Length: 311
Image (cartoon, rainbow, N blue to C red):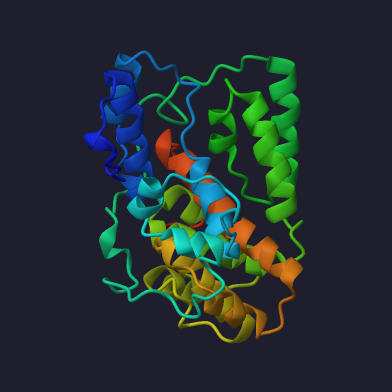
């Protein structure tokens, strides 16, 4: 059996091809999503309720924390080889013995990702229809989101969940734990993680909001500019620099994460509980930013020029 990680080589229905093509683009170049991509999904029978960003969360949690495959798992050898894993590694460890990252073929920059601009959709707050399917429930969740998300809330992104109040509820529950001041990392470090992720993957909507959050937490316009220009955190110091570097790499090349990446964050004073929070927070921002990019969420008008300018 020949197995390839190139999904284009598989026998797929037009609908499956369309959703995989969209998912790949949303993962690799979120800001390159256009109205045409959404129209293509609709032509294949998909409704505006479709969401395709969750895997960008869970895979980065696993890679960021070095989660191993089950040693007694009955994995198909051809599938393992397609992902560069030997059967011997499964019986020992994939991450634990990888003290250093694999040799990287490209420099840490956003040059590998398509750089787009902020969406400007004629549909309103985003590129999909957003009439709430359960108005009372959505109104409650929307109000809660506005209350928790600071002085410049992601109103349009919350409205984009109108047809999926269940998804908004789940996202809000994650947000309480990993951001919005509830992570235990502090508002400033939460904003840095979000800004690093957004600048690395080039997701302008989320990026502007995290830039605004950093400014609201006492950051300067110069700090924001430098972090957007170089999301590896070279302009930061101490623990913030270590977290930025970790979050940038987890966003850019999750498959290269190594024990040394965790150790670098641990060595500046973070406990293992913090490492879980940092990995999950960076992964969550990869999810949230791609939801906004995937449905072409339009930026609100109440954000400051200092937050908007870098994007």
